Length: 423
Image 1 (cartoon, one colour):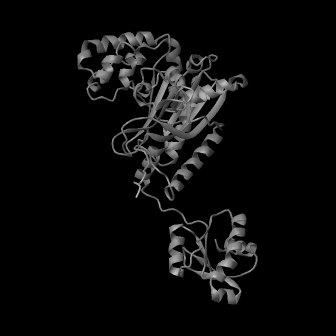
Image 2 (cartoon, helix red, strand yellow):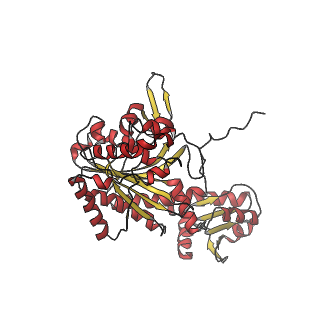
Image 3 (cartoon, rainbow, N blue to C red):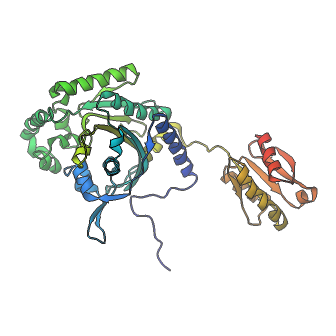
């Protein structure tokens, strides 16, 4: 007998009833993005590897350790999408969207990273994110932060905390690089191997290290805010003022740099202890130089990404596993004659009702059919057996109240109308 094939390590299958929680969250996401004026974009799941090397940065963990890269049949190096921002900017550039002015785009879909699988972290995971392009001012930063904050607070994650920082631009970043080198170099032999290797190439990456050996030196590192140029300081101060006016509480956290090279000026994370240790709900920031680095015009941009798997885990941790609401109808036929009469009714009800219509076609006893209805979380059962056929009616059972009523066995529209009255 052939061995059973299982899903690759670090991936998961998502199926009912769990998919209902996913669909509920995605419905909220699509509605929220629409209310903020964002349109959905979908990009290929694989891209030229160069896009991520140039866009994300060759010294990042993603490029150095986590990408799924392969040669296609034309010997071209391709990579499964490890993050969304670079592909979205590539698509906007390729299709000349920037010529039409500022763009507000959002996405929902999978990313792929080779990392150690753990609860809430998968090698194929899913993200929701937004990208707002064409606005250089702090108003756009506020907009994307407000969108993320609205989503988090709407799901009752009351301990959510917004952490913000500024990592400057090409004017003031060299000063900060020098300050970091001066701080870390005396301790170079005490740092992790990755941090030792990155110190001269990109010392800012050390602040994003999760290695415990680096933690004492990261905590005492100089803050970026102390070396900001006038323009970056003005931008950051204006953002903080906007957040205060909009009643969005925040903490300035000098250790936030985000893990990708394209970020400039504003970076932020929203954290929560819903899963125990303080962990990131979503993160993002400004990336004014990314489009230009991909060969495009000088287009300012800001955005964020949120991991859907971890967010669903946080919702469950806060609210518990919610009982699914009953919805729809279970059509129950007791015997072949009843089944022949009920199948056309079920087909027509699927055209008429804005709710699911379930039907099991096997010969079972009524109790077994009702158990299936409970498993499907149906609100009503339509029961048709030999007695009902002889009497010319269908029994409509409310599966919440367990009350029965009779409806004439006629047109499906009459049955649909009766179900509407029974709600």
